[in-house]
Length: 149
Image 1 (cartoon, helix red, strand yellow):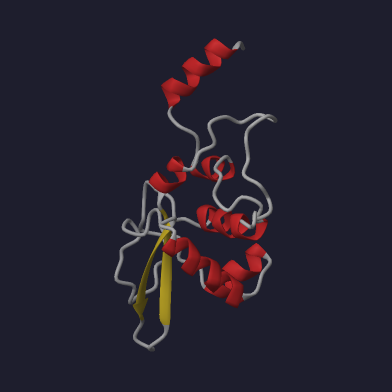
Image 2: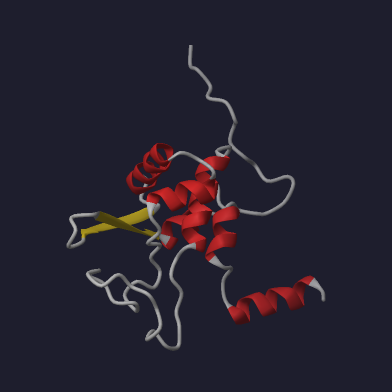
């Protein structure tokens, strides 16, 4: 398949998946831990299903299974295990992601007074941070902060 045929197929079948766009973005450059957490959230997002009858949703959750599509509702301890970091570090990154506009966070308290949080990646922000190209010659920012004298 030549480049022209590949470009036609890409245009016909739409844009890249969110996980690929995260990987091809310049978000959190040189910070593999932050990138890993963002990928875990992406992979943990609830997906569209034909039938939501058998989908588990906590009884007192304010959202239905259909409304949870696009949200990651993993507990922070699970996010920490999957991203290979501490819960406190996960929470620091989540607050940073929210401050940067990369994720939305919603929360609720169940009948046992336990707090729950849900995370949704803001795709428009990921799209704004796409590198202009994916090649070995792509311009990347400096890994080290430059001090002005």
